[in-house]
Length: 257
DNA sequence: AAGATATGCAACCGCCGCGCC
DNA sequence: GGGCGCGGCGGTTGCATATCT
Image (cartoon, rainbow, N blue to C red; front, top):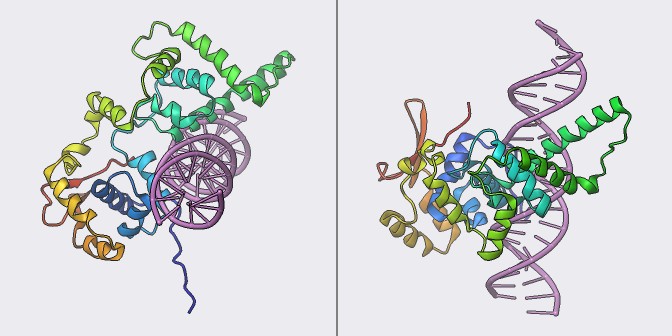
């Protein structure tokens, strides 16, 4: 008998998939991505689920352009650490490594273009050696620092470095806690609409029961979306709720139009 | 207005480290 | 100690949208 391996879905995520994923991450936490991928029936790889969550669905992610302070910090930290995107991202709460990486690439693209333009006009050779990029960034960061030194709301890379030496680096929880106290979180009504968090009694009860189930297939049956989780359209607003307790668990993630 | 080009960003791929058996 | 699976990371790609010519 030939086992035909089911083809995994790829490409852009649909709203339905997002809703599903958020529900299951809420249930099982931000771990065991393969498990979540299996029991959710999303037909995505665990990696894909994790990436979607980390880069797009995680509550507390900042949307929109990076602020000048953030940009400066990225440049400074890149000068210090190089392409350690995840490490840099940990210093910019609400920003993902992917976002920072994208910004850096766009920034470098712009830089090389400008240099090309200026070199062709001035005939002075400013050709860019890729191996010098960090140094160049450092130089630029230094310039930026000197011109924006009045900005004090943000730690400089050096300060962060010192902080990092003295204290163990931030945990994600700490970072999200910081975000939670900032204004950003106010724009994301996630917690209000989805209070079934690990700290809640409901969660503890549910998660305990769920973790006692060993068999993936059995669990999938239990969690069949039409049993435990249902999605519905609430006046044009797609919401997701745990069946039998819709008042306790529902959310509506933000989508850019 | 239309085509070309640039930009932004989501998502995939491959590699690596770690924990488990 | 080695094989395996999973999660995390950095590099890269491809598509949609914005901007330019």
